Amino acid sequence: MATTETTLVHARASAGLAPRLTAARAVLKFVRTKPLGAAGAMIILGMLAVGASAGVLAPYDPYHADYGQQFSRPSIAHWFGTDEFGRDLMSRIMYGARIALFVGFTASFVGCTIGGLLGVVSAYWGGRVDLFLERLMDILLAFPQLILALAIASILGPAVQNVVIAISIPIIPRAARVVRATALSVKENVYVEAVQALGAARPRIILRHIVPNVVAPYIILVTAQLGGAILAEAALSYLGLGAAEPTPSWGLMLSGSALSYAEKAPWIAVFPGIAISLGVFGFNLFGDSLRDALDPKLRSR
Amino acid sequence: MRTYILKRLLLIVPTLLGAATLVFVIMRVIPGDVALLILGGDQGQIDQKQLVAMRHQLGLDQPLVVQFGTWLWGVLRFDFGKSLWTGQPVVDELLIRLPLSLELALLATMVSVIISIPLGMLAAVRQDTWVDYVIRIVSIGGLAIPGFWVGILCILLLVIFFGWGPPLEFTPPWINPWLNFQMMVWPVVTVGYRYAAVTTRMTRSTMLEVLREDYIRTAWAKGLAERSVVIRHALKNSMLPVITLVGTEFAFLIGGLVVTETVFTLNGVGRFVVDAVAHRDYPVVQALIFLTAFSFVIVNLLVDLTYAWFDPRIRYR
Picture 1: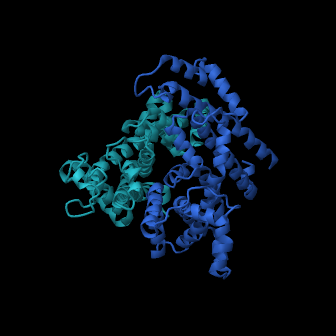
Picture 2: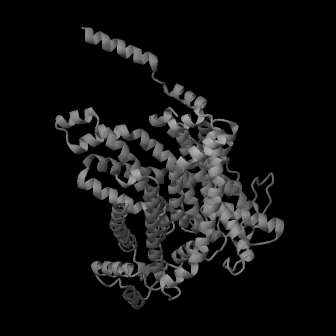
Picture 3: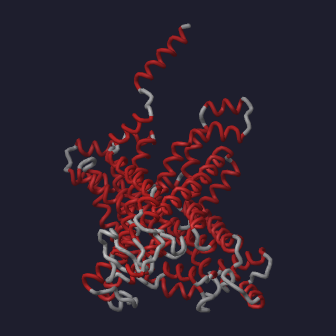
């Protein structure tokens, strides 16, 4: 009887000390304590909105070449001007947001998921499996991200889905590292020992007991990789290994023609770059603040 | 220290072997016939005889195990075969382009260190003031701006306002320093600002950690001047992680050079990679990918050894 009372008191006391945050409150707290992160979130939401409603918002067809309108300066009709085919730059940038977001999200999701699972398996299995996977990740880490992506993209050929593969592979070892470290400490918890004693199979323990506890670092990882993935997509497309013409990819819009018409139409080389920088800036700001907010180790700082 | 060096040297052998294997796997095992790609067969009709000849030339008609052995043996002797595009040995082609890239990488690293360490230090010492916020926003912004776009903007401004483009022919600094400077300054800015952003953030966070140490409190308590506490006590002790970062970033610079050299049409190693990919010059591509990994492993080793030299605790782990 006495024990149940004390646990009740404890439960009440801890409830009083740290009220469970509702989703709305958590968001409010995030905005209040992390203004920079909130600004990043606004940029991301804006980008998502523009990408989602590009079909409605865009004033022109992004693929429609209008040879009467080549190299138009930014004006009321064409806010960001037109390119060498007379295509409206603002419409192309709006549709470009779709590609950047698609590649960014899928590449970092695929890379972090595969890497995260490998990290968990590596940490939980231990022994030879761990040794082998760790070595493999070390080897993958020896290749600079862009070089590895470049090599993979060159073999797969230029196409959006190949870019996703090329960008996600270099993310795998980076994600595996982080998740493995967290999983190692989760593994030491008593409840893991308890389910082991109950005779649960390894895959079950991993999926039901370890994976849920590494979700926070996993989410941090995915957001942290987003900006880099968008940058990598831009770089690959710029180098001619990403999306192929006439796809309105931001990186592709800056390649080749942008510089050859530098004097005549500098806006071709300016606006897509602003779009990339702003988008990546938003993701980086948000990712940074999210890490601070979710990572208990950093919270005290 | 000697055992530590030996241990580290032994450890890089499996990594390099693995890297060589991985490059082989990427280039040969991933679906797609390299010979077919080189001949442009994915785009149209192709002469079967030509295809057989090309396969033979590349050694693709041999069993995988033999191909792998040949590749490893070549790697051991630093013989990566000949470029399909120029017919010259890959290593010779590489050596022609190496000085430019090394100069660019060294200068960019130097510039970024000179800018970023004082900035990171300032941000840490003035944490949560407007100075800190400005430095943080600028450094996060620096990471968001793609390198090739900065390069494009540099050229754009130069061409529009000065009607001037950077010289195209590489002049080594020991022949004509001024011409060399004119050519390198914008690429260095383009590559350097990004690394400055990364290093600033790193310096700031390690400085913040060190500033909370007990011996810093002692230094303050002794009544030392701020300059002395920050520079003599804090900066010195927060430099190790920064040195590691600068070292690894230097090794990874080749990734940054790829786009920068393309923007400025500099004939360096980075552009060599892009050209090789565009020309489907697979011997060059696989050699360069392996060599980047190789240089990364070596630089990493050097960084680790420096680290162990400065911090004896590491040697005994």
